[in-house]
Image (tube, rainbow, N blue to C red; front, side):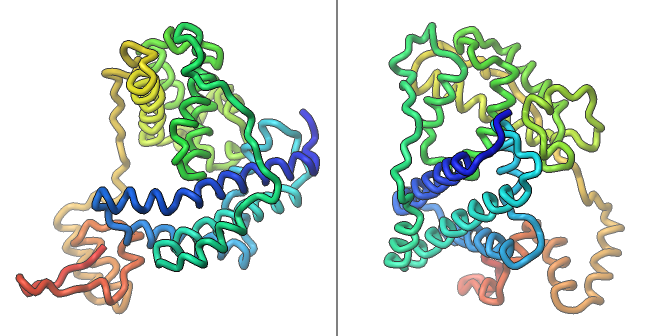
Length: 337
């Protein structure tokens, strides 16, 4: 493979910057859409704020950049990056910095600090005009000639409002889908059996956030003879693959383009089997709660809230005193998540 060079690094960072700039430009439109659908922005703001803080912490700790694994996975598919740890650390740090700028822009707009939002947006704008490769729209391709690869390129345009992290995750999923179904396979020839076979293949894949798989490409993971059970992807991940296929074949090719009479994902189901990390009997819970009541501070209230509310860990960890409120009508206290 070609050795990674400075021009390759510059081009890659320019494409990342262009993606974040494009996403940041759409923040006002996306916020307005959520308000029109009566969606609360409080939860969204807390998530973006927390992510920005986590990204900021990566610059003051000795740990790796948050995006390091993604950068390695992406670049190793095209270049030889052997012995380039410093270059990879630089790229990932730049990626994290742009990601944090995007989070800061999002929070600034939600706080109505519009001048600050504009300043951050301007700083994200690439100095050189970045023009992604022009792709023929699938609408111009005959249905009988549309391949899986062409359909995906059109689907990415259709889903242009995807946030950079979501887009990156789905592109990683598609590498497997493309390898299993075939990049040049005609979409009209994909059957329900092909989709089921894809899900069976995905069930045997390793989790790519775990060593040594985080340094492997999609094809390398597919070529593994046997993966230990503890290293296999979760059933939720398999279901995410199915959802992506449903978006491509059902929503886009069938519903939007009318290329297919019916989607090969129709009637294909996959049940996500989430692991029970704390399945306790009533007797065990009473013992735990009795113990929690003897503790002080967050150790007491954090675990009691977990036991009684069913709220997520992150939701409880982010609670403030001001989130405990009194309902005037019922005179009951409640927690505002």
